[in-house]
Length: 119
Image (cartoon, rainbow, N blue to C red; front, side):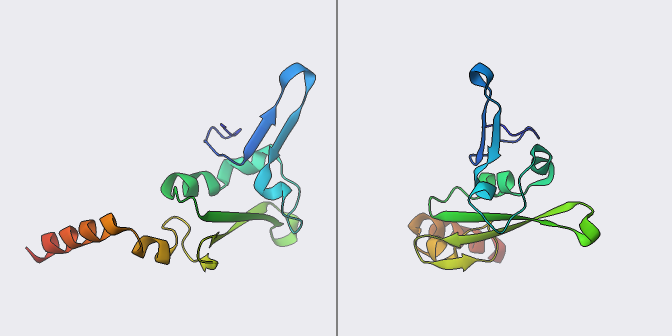
């Protein structure tokens, strides 16, 4: 669904049908350590870019909104993990290193790139 910032995000939900007024980020809703979500939080949220860069079905994200120094502003912290291998992912844009190693087509692509670099 398209966020208030104009980006596609599968965790954003809204319902204005027949007088309802529901807007929520389901990543923040499920996180008790986070501040309450506001629509303005979508403007600089990294989650839509992560979802666009990494389409892994095993990717699990956790978004935490925390106040900045002296309560001026809000920062978003994203933690990613792999459901399949039960490990934390350092770079969610790239994905799980073990999942990447298991893809047979990716090895052929990597070898072709190495051959181009050698030439």
